[in-house]
Length: 318
Image 1 (cartoon, rainbow, N blue to C red):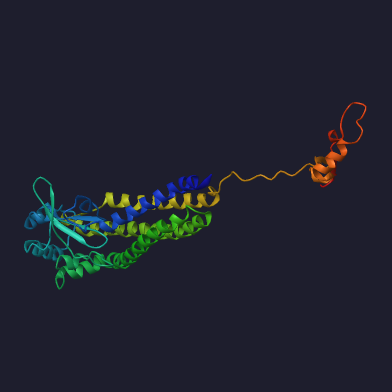
Image 2 (spheres, rainbow, N blue to C red):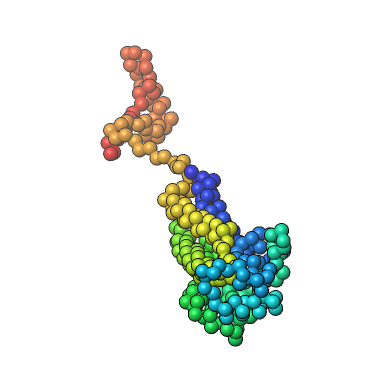
């Protein structure tokens, strides 16, 4: 197949590796730049408090009579809303969160993004300045398990994505050597397998914690017209990166077994068939001098000279 065929064989897994790397970078970019549309649209979870912040004093009138609410929590939320400590929406990313306002037409405008922080997790008590209020105890009772688990897993998810992006870069670099040999493909397959384990683990964990957090927020805050929703675009990118990673690992493995890169045109050595005769060179009879001697011999009855007879050597090699 040759080097050109070898390159064509690894082109697909290399392209899939690059696609997985792009998806991982996009996950990192969510909510890191409020001036760019793509990072703004990528978030794990969004908390929409527009219906509450619009008129917190009348929120009690909008709650059905058959729903029990905690007045301490409501009073605390009303206080921070009046102090403008609760924004219309919050979008949570891997590094930080962004907050902003929603106008009457429903258009969103990000006004502030928190500083980027490793092992970040969204804590509503800190964000809404609910420390040392009656609401903090309520939140501790209602959100204790969910928030604690979320905070621990969020740290692992951040580490897993850092390892994933490093392994994806390594997979791409090692994959370059796969152009030249199957050993390069084998090394790349090993790196790709480890990368796939980490990206699947990170994607599974981040999906589980934010689905759980969505349920917790909905159960506790939905009565106060504060809603939460998953970021569909971010989740699509997360699992698309997983799909690209699994596919690239499969095709790297295929390239180990196929497409050697060696040319099929080799010099063929043909052995002589045993028990055949081959002509012996003239030195066997002493060259030209021997030929002259034979030429002086009497001619046969058919008029042939001595040079018409050529000795043959019997070869019985097997």
